Length: 263
Image 1 (cartoon, rainbow, N blue to C red):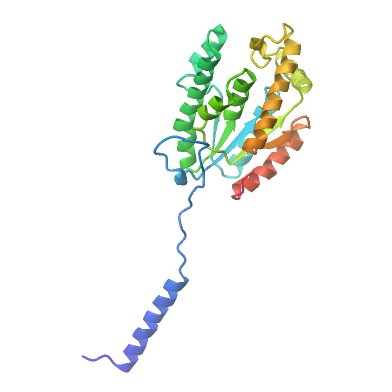
Image 2 (image 1 turned 30 degrees about the vertical axis):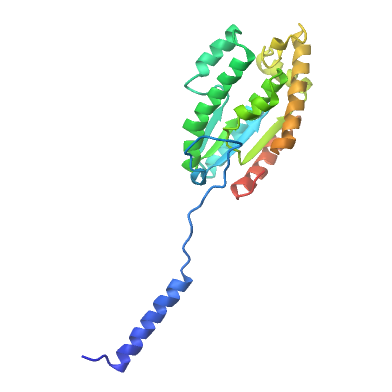
């Protein structure tokens, strides 16, 4: 039975509306990550799927690093972001063995470096990457930069150290809380009434006086961080200021990162 002129017109209108709808319809592409490794990285990792953010806070003991991280985690989670924390000597694989080795002071510098690199690699593969893939914000309480600076201050080959940590992901933001050694001494004594053997660089044998050694060692660490800042382009923050001012600066910067910018 032939179609009437009216039905033909109605059919054409329906087809026209469908075509118009298809033209206007915008298909949202999947969000892909632009993350990269510093070097060879970890094989078979799909970087484009790591849609979370990796934010690093660096700084010596007494720099206020841990206090800032607690505040940032509360702020981020209060705004609906899921967070995960990682840090030095937190690997369930080697952290206890590393503590024992340090306590006995029985390892060569190269072996100690590889121990720390193993601690980092385990967290990278089993915590950082899976969390980023799930869209979490990963807060690192220190990252490869502290490990590299420690090695370099102790005379390790710069090229060797750089290659060792080429497996690391490039963070979305790195903040170095730069605090004067004199201020660090006051804060550490106020908190623990003592100075740490390793954070004082006593293993380097620069002097028998722990206070003098602490100042010399922290100065060397600062110089390495400022040298690395030029190469790795992280943000140096004046850590001698009050905690609230630093916290507000970090929040402002991290908001930019969450909006898709790099710091």
